[in-house]
Image (cartoon, rainbow, N blue to C red; front, side, top):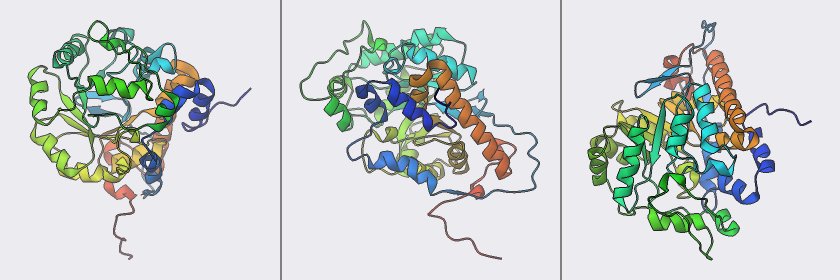
Length: 364
């Protein structure tokens, strides 16, 4: 009998064993040379911790608040597409795991379970990730359903006017299943002999004209708070605050869009400084350890989003697998807090980490 995973990274091999190659490659792959994909993880290793000793850590409080909603730990579930490719229960299993862990799941617009099925599966706080379509009337209908089904915020992905070049999907001729949030609204069945069907689908339905002015349009059709996901620069961070978003997600789309963008952890502090505390900043990309969560919070993130590891856990063991992934990260994060002398999340500060860009500290 194979041993149980002892860390999140070990779920990847279990997922490889469980999934058809096409689907495994879809979940694991990045854009082009996959330089950024590797950097998202590797950049964390260049950040060192600066622990404090002789601090009372007999009680550790990992809880935090996101847009007014209290969660058990600053670890949220990122929006990732098509969970039924990983497990028959799909996003419903992921949602139940998130609820059990008392954290927030962001449901993907490209889910294989409907937003209604996910909403009725368990009682929990959930956000919804949105792509704006060429058919704005359909996007408006989706937003109305999001509100009706009790989702608490919209996370607008802004880095995907077109799909990045994902060469594994092209080689495998990736076939996208029916995306059920669009049932009765538009067909998502695409057949092409030129590579990835998913790429052809996105090209056909996503609005490539989306611009900053359209944030006003989205705000005009919903009262939900709007976060934008896909910000990597201080220029865009300031612009996002100017147009009135409720939050920012620092993300390079899991390195699946534009290769040779920086690792998200290396630009997090730039965005945080530009925002200046006016809206919360969430972090997405490369989190594989509790130490990674700690590092992101020390650099100014309010919480992190976890994507691929959740899908690996789902593929390996359904809802239980997702719960184990989140629990492992929580346990590691709690231990990191204790060993760093931080009894609560608010005790984690910039002085608890040192990065490759920091000036050498003077010696006493």
